[in-house]
Length: 146
Image (cartoon, rainbow, N blue to C red):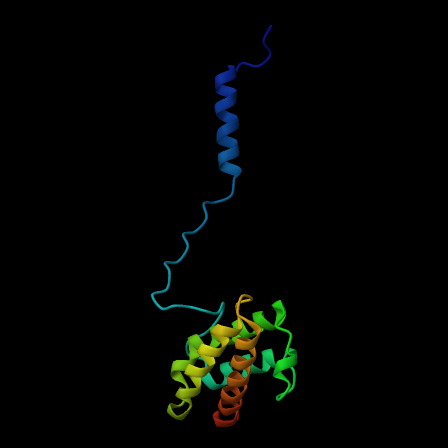
């Protein structure tokens, strides 16, 4: 004797409907990609470029040897990663630096691009680090205090 008046296909259909009704809602569609390149997560294009770039330079500095000792610098993943971060910040904000600092933006972009890859030969890293230091010092000096 069958105690359940519903047939097996009906029970299966009800189970599927119950699961569908109790499931999570469909995820919202992701926003379309920005037409402007973004190098930093959470970066606000309206941020002051001097503040952002000087901050990024300051983020990298604790891992760098003192000026004049560049030939003893170890270019570990941490060092290269922080310099890559500076590279991204400069790509995002550098073009909006004050006009007199734009030549240094180009130097920072080039040097951080050379310093970031592990495959860059040591002698090129040392030269790039010296150039980076001069440009970063000029940007820090030339940016108005914030």
